Length: 532
Image (tube, rainbow, N blue to C red; front, side):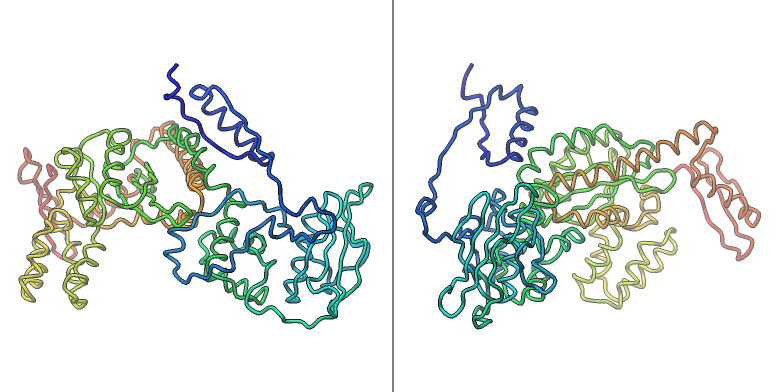
């Protein structure tokens, strides 16, 4: 076998979780990578083997990023890469006591909770400590200025018969002057902050870094750098929702599961949009939705790409046409993004008439008009022009716009009236003038935009699985009850029959299906062409 065809994936195995991760990856790829090569590396930590030498456990378990006080948020988030394999053994969450002080025989569930409590204690009192003993069954720390006017120390040990950690020695409150540390604290690490903000991140994964800085300032009375707060958020997200790198490795499993659930019986109409992702790896989430006969929004395809570029849109639309939207005569509504236009132009007619009709969202047309001409007093006129259903009404508004300036109507003509005016759309819009359907889905997924990629997919999968299963049951129930049309369509037909008592219909051209409809209440007359 040519060894150059085998690709190996390097990963560090440091605990049970990473071991399980390795075995999980091997199960998925064992047909392509039939072996695991394990290399053991021994590292010697300086200072640990010397009896009586002072050891700062925090320097071993965490890196103090406080010296990096870059004010450039974009530059930092672009260039910095968080180490997801940091040792977080100092994360816990037990308070020391109700009055904030320790006492002998106070019990804790683990060594981590002891360390966390001591950290919280020293941070709140603006003092620091040094670890003198850090062993599997003992932890011994003293005030960093021990012997210089303050003799604060604490010792905790594992009590095996009680299966807990207990404070064995404590000499009471600090007697030194408080407030010696003002801006940051050596023990207020990104790991400590990550644990402190965990409830906030769980409630809102999109929480701003500035809000985290404010929370730390309020809770600990310290001002931390943007760098440390951002890093703490990434660690908190990873602990709650899973590792960022592992997320991409498990992505194929979820994508395969999503392929099983595909909606059917929708209008031949789609709305597409893209939204930015704000997690560790950035990128964009592209979404396309349709609508079924009961006016339910049905997401039919997603893509996670590097960004909203022409190449990304081409990738998305090409695969959408190849695997999902395989019929012709479909309509697609989007904004006027030039990259979408470029992708459609590269599609070799796959998204052009007669296979597909591309139309624009009227709301984006209005925004583009304001940005182009800075004429807010004409915004409503432009929007109304797009909404009129008859050419007569449309032309009346169009003439009013032209009276203001021919530049306005020339701009509208350059877009193509059939792409945004209801009166000229040939019935392809199905009455949809905006991309509100797809933006509703983006709104639902907004909370997931800051999360690892698999969380986004899993979040989407469970919601869609529930939706498709429920709608499938409803559809089969309608079929069993011999309903010809959907509930929404049946209701509309019944309402139309009731209103029909107030109109008179005259047929003028049976072959071409031309009719005149006269409303008796106000005398309005409409010409209907069913062949269109």
